[in-house]
Image 1: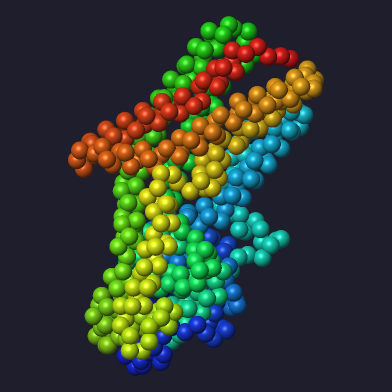
Image 2: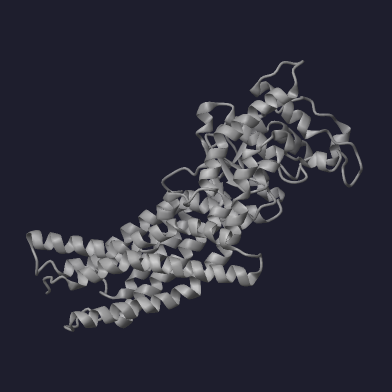
Length: 484
């Protein structure tokens, strides 16, 4: 939506020349921002006031790869991190996987020290690509062109800003995708609703609305952050307790396994209660959005001009009404003749939102799992660097095994490594149901109550994770295998 204060005081000198938002705009005003610039300086554009220098970063374009739709009252940091997850997390995951395998091969053939610390290469690559992937692509690929209102609309020039806002439909209709950074406030703002209306009117374009709830971003970061630390703690614990070269009996190995699990429980009870405590608050906020859309009416959405009674707060001059302009545009798109009731076309659009969009939002924020693609990229990615250890170990066995024995041993070693990402993914999927359960178990809103439930949920998740991982690992330990 346009930035706060989109209606300049100079409007008292002119009326809106057209009674609808135009789908045509002067070529010099149809401007986009390269995605790498939108993500530059740690989200600077999302968190700071605009300057004439900001507008200079945009450039004329005929089409946009994406229109970044959001409300400006929401956290700039969360919007920045949400875009990193959308556009960079996949590349970070696959880069980390390739580098981790390569590190394992180099270790196995003696080109790198066969030491556990080399997994740091995988971690480094993951975070480096996660934050800088768009810039890394620049030498071989043209950057995606995005529309970001704060930069692509001339906020420093009232006349140019007015023209761009009245031509907002031109930006939207020339965008391949609508990327909605969704908050509980989003569907209460009329300009945000109008941006959705532009894509909802065409069944094919409806499919190109990408929703990313900002609270889901928080939960993804919490879950993945916990699993990164848990993986570091778990692998450090293995180095302390498990002696892979020992000829001790099976009972000794079981003792070491139990010791490792107990250590991990202690580690879990430091991290997870904090994550569940914060996560319950996020989950509670997310529950609002499905209810909003089930009862959605465009007439209930608010806009700045109406909230200040169409008067400039500084000069007191009369301001034109955005609602009249947007309603007139929606009448063209959603039917209704000149003499028709405005409720007809507005209700047509509202019904579309309730029937077509509400289910998607409810699946994202009211369902029982976080977006699977991002769970894999963010949570499973925490286990990928440790694949280097297993690749190096497999190569060290090549001189001693061959044929089916080698294949069976490598398959077993892959499953042994794979239990960590499988455990992390399954426990991450249970995160949202546990948070919803925690909200149901509250007996009051006190901090003591929330912390008590957070520790209870931590215990449940720890037991669940142990039941997934421990049986397979202990079973492998009791099976005789060839050794070098």
